[in-house]
Image (tube, chains in turn cyan, green):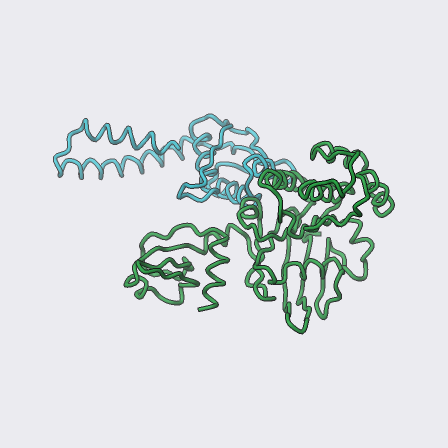
Length: 126
Length: 282
């Protein structure tokens, strides 16, 4: 499991953790029922506060992606992630639609838009 | 027992300085950073907790026990590190052990020798021959070798080089892997604390300005950089401190009170402390 934090990034640390774990779950790199590292271990390894890793896990719980039981730790929840993915896809489609509209009204070619999309997609990976 | 430390209405008055109405709670399993300028009352607070000073008022509960009525039981579970190692110059690490073994029922020789190895502390040298960093490491080794549940460190990083300071952060994070263990650490090197502290208590001129969850602090406060004209338009209730220069203004703001948009940057704990002190002086 890889988690890479940026201290100079605009996003708060907890959000960076939440996003990266969420991405691993939705992309299937973390499977249902798989245990997650404890908040204390994660804090120690990343050299950050326990309160920050705790907040990240609480956010993942709130989004229905993981569950935590006292004494046992946190696990990837056994739910239908396709539904979550579907929602993201719908929302992405909506935004892309707007982008296409904007590009067309400015006379921007599809090729140019594709290059831009590719670049943005890769940059966001960080 | 859910709190490692509770201070209620703590007060200590000197002719020149008054520490007053200190209320704070350190939940078990967490690290609290005690910050503030020199002379803000950090060491006084710690000495009161340890009963090294007589308090004028207030209650102190350590690990669920009253720190006065159950002093012996409390001390057995406390590990303490001061900025100056307080072992006699002629002592070697094994002499430290000989003394502490008698003081603490829970003394763990194996643990102690593991820390000595880890910190590369030579057993054949006396404290007098140790460097500043080695003395502090010896104090930490001694404080962690009787299975203390609360570790209190008063300016442990003063005069230490960055490598040793860094190692201390690892030691503290390892210590709280057991969620029954907690840490109270005072320092004016805030960037160290900012990384690993869960709670920040900010003392200023004998008053506790806040004692809060770090995540909440970082959510609440932000920094803005703007022109003088833009600054004038801000709701002054949102501004907690500012620094003017010839070309613009930098200000610490309360995000919840900011009405207008515009970029608000992350404030560090150091920004929060500096600007609140500055804000008061203006």
